[in-house]
Image (cartoon, rainbow, N blue to C red; front, side, top):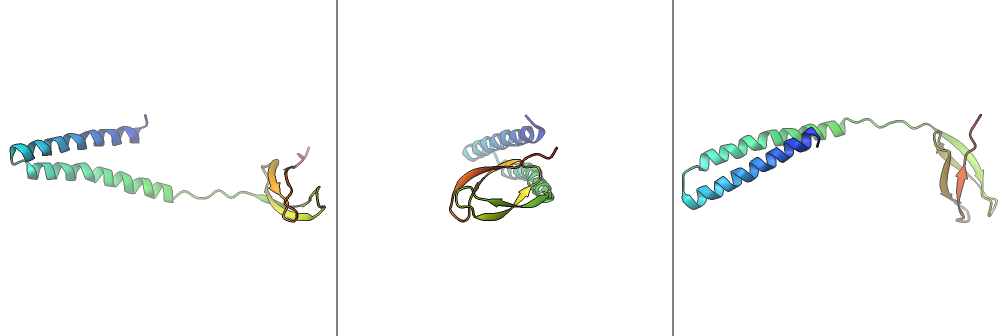
Amino acid sequence: MNKTRTLLLTFAILAVAILLISFYDIFNDKGWRIAIFIAYGILALPLIGMVVTSRRTSLSAKPVAISTVERRFRCPSCQGTFQLSIPTDQTAFHHVCPHCGHQGTITIPSKK
């Protein structure tokens, strides 16, 4: 288990324990309402911090630029030509002809 999951599990167990204590207080009128309210507040602050931090981290991720090459192809079915932008690291992909709808796999020969 990673650190964040363990921390969340710990907070969940503490929240259930505080909930059970609050039920005990409701039925037995022990006068623990303020202490239970403070415990929930103390429990909520780190969780709010974790949520804010995780959102900030995911929003700061930068997209990776993928280099592409413009290539012209001829459909083997209708002989129509079309142009595609292909990532330079991709050697084969599935495509549908824009003219006739013929489906097929385009394989880019490797340069040696």
